[in-house]
Amino acid sequence: MNEVVTKFGPVLGRCMVALIFLLSGIGKISAFQGTAGYIASKGVPMAEVALVITIAIEIGGALMLILGWKARLGAAALFLWLIPVSLMIHNFWDMSGQEYMINRIMFLKNVAIMGAMLYIMAYGSGRYSLDRK
Image 1 (cartoon, rainbow, N blue to C red):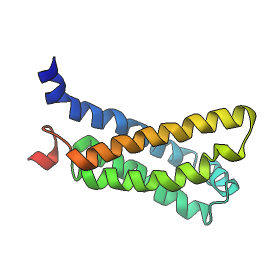
Image 2 (image 1 turned 180 degrees about the vertical axis):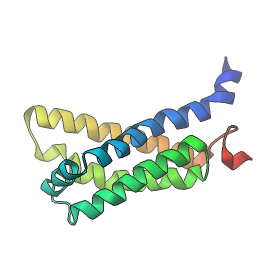
Image 3 (image 1 turned 90 degrees about the horizontal axis):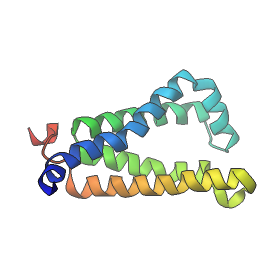
Image 4 (image 1 turned 45 degrees about the vertical axis):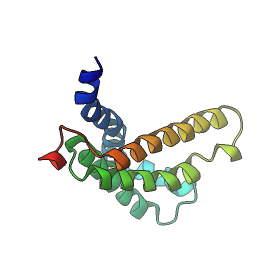
């Protein structure tokens, strides 16, 4: 069992963690105006520009992780991007009730994902990746 996890764990882990960014980025394209409005309501300046950058980072970083191409760079971009997103969008400490609970979960989910990005930055993409070719 350990051999299977060691062999296939990195590629499966990269794909699993990348899926949230890929689907989120694609979803933001189809709901561009609504997402830009939500981002603006959170006090993000130049919301439409920030959204275009967000989509590029989410989809680009996800594809880099999935393919294992420059995965450390993709993980670093996603890690750094998660910092302002977590602090500005999921600022649960300024909320109450259900909004507090949902945003606390989202903030902690982002912290966990940041841990996965640190792991990829430290150990690379593993055996099955374009970086290894």
